[in-house]
Length: 286
Image 1 (cartoon, rainbow, N blue to C red):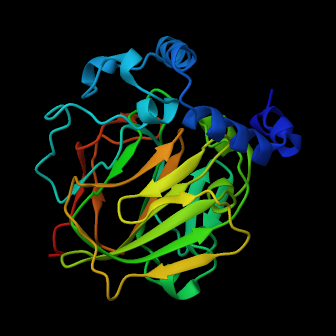
Image 2: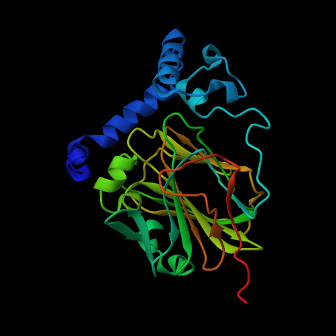
């Protein structure tokens, strides 16, 4: 069965209603019911609670509190590298931006301008640059951290669809990451210039939150919303938390040309962990 055929039901499912319902369930403080839900989820997806700062399943008041649980200190050391992986997850795709186009999956590409909500000027920073799409599965740690030091300059909320972002859907839905709801975070690095981290929404992702704003959605707005931070400095260090998903999704990163040479061991579908070597600045040309 082709991937396009497998995802056909997603076109007709009431994704907004399902997502709203999942958000209410995840935020509910249901006592024993909540504990049973968490225990089932841990068993179903093989969540490693030994790495959690609080491994006691029964102590979480809501599913959201469990899902965004912090890790124990020291379980994700930062590599000695210019760029570290910002999440636990798996690589969907990564590599060079083809002029202005990003590879989503075999046969599917989307443009950097589409990804960032139609801002061609912002997208122009990444012509011939590099990208990485990292997928967070249900079992993963769902906080997102900084790949390098950065100063926040803008945050853009882009309304969109709520397709799943699992590998099958990425292969079956054209332009998926530039089609779904997303939060575009624009940073400036003294060493590496402008870079972008895009938090992509998905079916039953109750919300996305950032360290400086809190929950961005809901409410789910019908128009693009743009915040600037020129007079409100938000400076985050490499490895510091910048956001989180309430239920799993994907992070897309954009870097300028000649900014990053990716880890030679990286490959599509490879598992990655927060803090591991993502890449280094390319050596100067001879």
